[in-house]
Length: 304
Length: 226
Image (cartoon, rainbow over all chains, first blue to last red; front, side, top):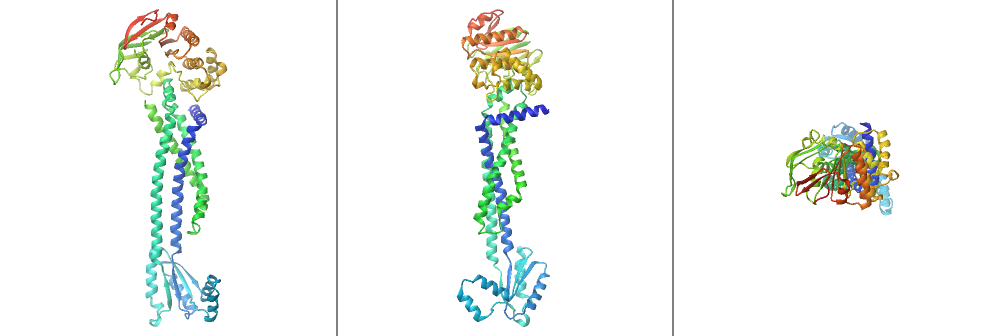
């Protein structure tokens, strides 16, 4: 059995390197298919990360009136942190707000000068992040109606900023883009699978006379088929390496193109962190596709 | 050894391959099958190799009904037969050594046997110096000698040769026939189809003549008569 396997593997290896044109055709089409599969994984990671990034950026910003004392705001912060809907509350003092504003407008002398005349017009601010996006509405309603925030009927809150519509639209857009990219990639995978199977079938069809001769001299079906399956394995391994080599620059390019839009998504880092699983997936897919296509092609020829 | 029992072959287009053919080939015989193109010579050999199934009748190899064999048993039958074809049919991407080794590997022979027998059988056909060449580098006569070496390396009981000299010049034809005669002399049964009158006349062995799928003559030491 071992001798047989060794002979099959050796024969497949020799045939692969002695028919370089046919072998290259199989490897190239397999590489395209694996590249598209890899692109599907990366695009899924990209959109998942982008969606999470946008969701993380969503918060409710509560600006207090300038005359509200710090202890009052921290007291409210503590009580807000006790609510189960809220994940995190960050406090920004009046001085911090002024300093941030100055930094943002450092190149505008007029504003800076006006500030020094007016003093500090800002109140303290709380940024509230919810456990999940669906909870923001409840939190916003609470802030607008809670009696603790309106002692004596007069509110201590200057402004509650919650851009729900914008966030919802962005999330919807990203989610739709993810679905669209997934559908397009699936169609591409299907097309490249058809091309791959046909190319490998054609490469093996060229050997139909040899297969027929092998049958006439008494070789068993498995002994004839074996080297072709091994060639499928070689093609799959080489194609997985090539597709990985192509995916990495693609990941860097996407990172560079999208850095300004979604700062949190770095596909090149994702590629590095998930290299082993991505390589495993592509290697396994390549071997399965190569072997399956070869099996189907030889089955057709061995029937006759 | 080979027994055709009222064998007919009608193709789907209604053309007749063989028509009620019966004959026996005894072990050790050298039988030539002659006839015009389309007379049924190749069909007859394909029946023995289980490449074609008869429409009616049976073909026996010893006591085995060839067309009753399962798909798994057919390769075992073919390993008992050596085949030589007009167009040589060597594996183009394998060296001469690998071409011959392939049939030995298919028969489950060991590496040691292969290493010893392949050079030996190439020596018998005078091509030991071409052992690492590819078929494309050989002349037609050399290719046919390799095909014969491949056919006899497993020491088959029967050698089938379908127009083995059809693509060869007169000198190579004589050499190939001489090799086949020697193979027969050491006890291998040979069935050969041919168009070559000179070959038949020089052999002086049994000749079966086919016309339109029917046997019209069966001479023990025949001449080429059509």
